[in-house]
Image (cartoon, rainbow, N blue to C red; front, top):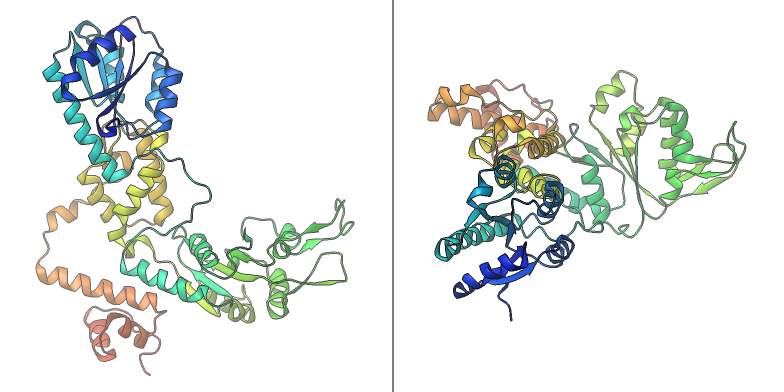
Length: 457
């Protein structure tokens, strides 16, 4: 039985690879040799391979593009170049090694030195596999989605999702753009009794006003010019499942009336039809705007607000969960590793510190975009703050705050976050923090935090 932990794929001229394998046989390495790139590709895709040796000859048997494609197939395989000292002097060869290889071994071979290189490479390969996984399993489109993070804010959201999923009432999901409102809606659906039914999502702000009604409710043949056949609307097609209305605050006022009527009796009427259709669907809605302010300004119906706001979930902004930033960054790094050079291995210390200091106005969506762009643009082994397009805050390095300053800052942030999570309700915020309401008011006054609406209660 072959020891897969010391399994090495060697690609190149059969004569040279055979002599190399024979020289290293005493060190218990197991070699699979091939001179065919197609066969090498099949081997890389069939099972995890910790180390690959690529013979780079000055005659350039293969093109650089062919080799780059091959070496990028497996993100967990570390490559070692095998070449002569003369070949190492060529600029293109050195550039190729610098970009794609972990190490190089020169010919004529020194078995002891070559074994040392392979042992060191194997150690790094095992560390990478532990940290990032093998990188050989293709993404599973049917895999359950998950929420990344272990912060208090995320744990609270997940507990809320579990409770909300058990009942069949409408839900309003609030939160800033990029905080994962649709992900929250999908998790509610996946944990509900409707999980086997469809999950239909529509962005109310992305469709022209004239199309929203037909998209939601459908239409009959001949209902308007161009309606050559009947169309089932998104609400009707979601029967037995969940309907997610993203950015419901952008829904035109006339459509709000129709949606309100549907929420009251779960019956719809296609455009151009006189017949009502009963639809069994749960409605989840999301918005990044304050609907209470929209009600005051006359842009949103109060009766619709109360209909969709039976249950509520709030997605926290990234600045309230800085302890999750590294886990999120590593998650997206692993997700997009196949798109970039296998040379990039992760983030340096400065980039992790800088990411925690950044306010992330675009939240998780901004983090994803910055990580993905940095992985493509990075020319070193580790991503730096410059690759992410972030500047480290100099004031954090120079300020050297006292213990009292740190305590005051932490108290103020905790109070502000608790009030935000509990919609400015003092009693609930105090219970969230595990303190009395009197203590909460003392902290509010101490740190000049605006008093909540129920402060006189």
